[in-house]
Image (cartoon, rainbow, N blue to C red; front, side, top):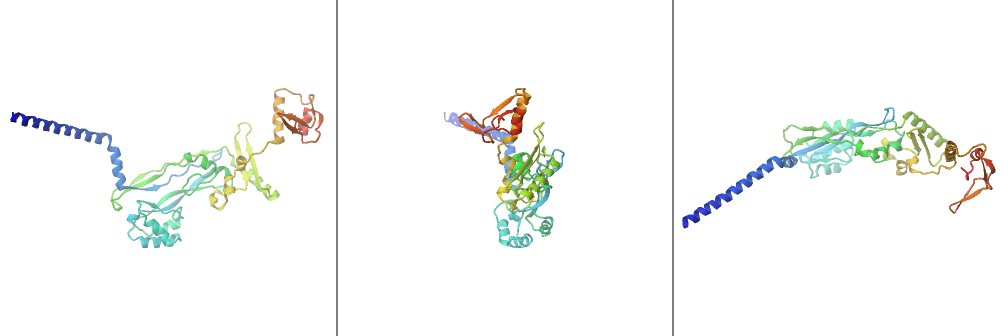
Length: 352
């Protein structure tokens, strides 16, 4: 009896052990074949760091391929604080080159982050400034490529094109409307570091940025130049509060040119007030077509052969009631008896 009890316990222990082993094997199999990508990513995130490389925004051109908005390459300053051994000295040297207070640079160098972008002091540096910083050869101080928007025609078509901010995001106009297509996807230089942030002697990985999509407008830059010139003439002669112009292809509805005043240079949008930046008057402002639309309604009835311009007549009394409202002709008392050709010639409000 005693022997049988021991034998039963041994079998139970063996069975439990076998079950545990099977569960361990299943778990290892699951990790190896189903979770390895996620775990690998988590492991790499602990010891890999990315130096960002900005993508170029897509180019904007007119209908003939002339570039209206392009990019120029600039450089920006990035710190990896854990790699900067003497933060005081580094901040002092860099602050002299950038022309800013040492305390401001020291704040960036002392941040408890893996990567610190020096913003705004270190953004979009000139070639000479970037070269001076590079010559310092300070560990943990990096210069990365950035793209800056450039508008070669300056004020031309400024309200239509809009402008972008320092982070290359569209803030108005075409730049804002199609920002997700123009933006592109940033790349990076991936390097590896230990828990203290010290760079490991492993091969860096280059992740190529994906540039944004190009956009071609229906605008004709030569027509646009004419619009801009005439708007400048109107402003100089009349000094109006605002001026605007649109050129459209009546066969297709394509906008060939559009401009308004006051305007601005999107290369230096920071120098203008919000009213100048945000008001694309041909779209922002609304105007009644007035008498200019009379030729449209008259053309329609002639095309449909509903009236004879020279023989059909209309008597203008000077006013007419429509849906409870009284509409008046511009001429007090009206024009009296007239043909429809005279109605058009006199710009009669009641019949047109």
